[in-house]
Length: 240
Image (tube, rainbow, N blue to C red):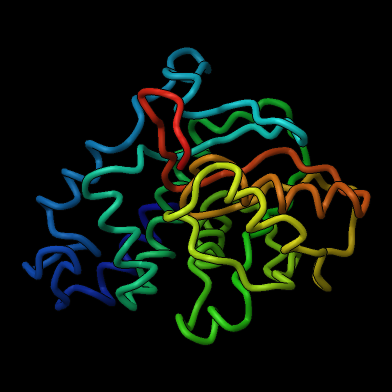
């Protein structure tokens, strides 16, 4: 489905709604001013098929050697929007952000030229947190992303088998220990003929992505990389 048609549908549904960030009238999900500020967080467009900033769009990580593709930098209005999605009961933001990410992928995605068969697997929440929140934000983002890209989605391709602590308070080593062994493959992941593209809302140090990828690789699947709406980029090495 074309992005313009999807956005028109969102506009019709939420035409009378207020912007979740500033409460002003919103023609789309966000008002014009907040949307402009959101676009300021988006990475510069790649030139001639290459990413404008390697560390911003794709990064090699240890173990699974995952590539990372993200829509924007985790700051400003994008950070606020993701907080509203996760903690403000604004589920519609997940589908909408997924559509934005999907359009960015269609234009600049690193695998488009290789015609690799991919299947999208969202990073899952533990059942306890899912009941608290009412939805998995990564699954909503993946749903919007797949609407635009046409890629298939395995919503329950991964299962979170144990609860983990909130990550933003932890350092790098603590993050790795926190999510180690937290995932296993799920019932909707039946084929190994497609490489897996993990999906999450935010990519920071990569600890969650690595733990998820390890569970899939141990089960015999190939993990191509991870795609996220936002990516944290630090000016100097740090835990985060």
